[in-house]
Image (cartoon, rainbow, N blue to C red):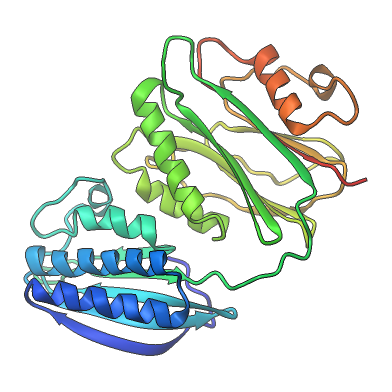
Length: 345
């Protein structure tokens, strides 16, 4: 869990959990605290459900414990922190506990997948010892109100299809714009068919719920979300249109190609999100008008250059993506291409 250096706790409420009724009290307290901070009603309700999960698991699986509800502040942002602590037997397999549907005595079980999906940062520790217990710390940050000062200047387009022998696509893509930023990405579930589709859509769901977070944080959360699936390979690129920068991270064999001057330092790390994940290496580079970026899964051949896929100098991104998929997509694999072209001159 990555904590800002200047994080401070501004308020704290501790609730002792020893019976089922305490879960209701925790839920109401969290919902009220979240509303006072400024979270929308739907987010406050989701946070209340997280509190219910944590309190219920403390009662049922750990014989009780403490749920602390804190308001936190850092980097001109405000958020809520939930800390769950017990002196029970601890979680024997933390990675397995993130799997949806996993629930065993002595573990937080199903609650971890729900907590991970809702919260921005999550850390679970279970020291050694017969009664060392489990400590969980989870943060959710409020997105401040923001007036866009630099509209998105880019054309963004994607094309994707399943392997010819399957009805569902094991690839997925993301394109989200908010404030002065845009996040795009390509995800490839391992293998093909329904299990690859489940892995890819699980990762996409997590990413889309946390687009404003730093890329390293998004990769950590997606890794936890994909436990129990086949896992995915994934590349994400975040554009800051005000700062004219591109921040990039990649785990696995999602390919990236950029036009313009030579780009260095875009590190591709081998591994699997939800499996043997080495952690994403994040780099930031300047983004200039006229650049084009293509992210594409291994279902598209790497043997192409810019002249092959452009029909004219001002092709929209969607046309480039479709041409790339049609001309270089492999029939024996799911295939996805996502293109970002800056339209500023």
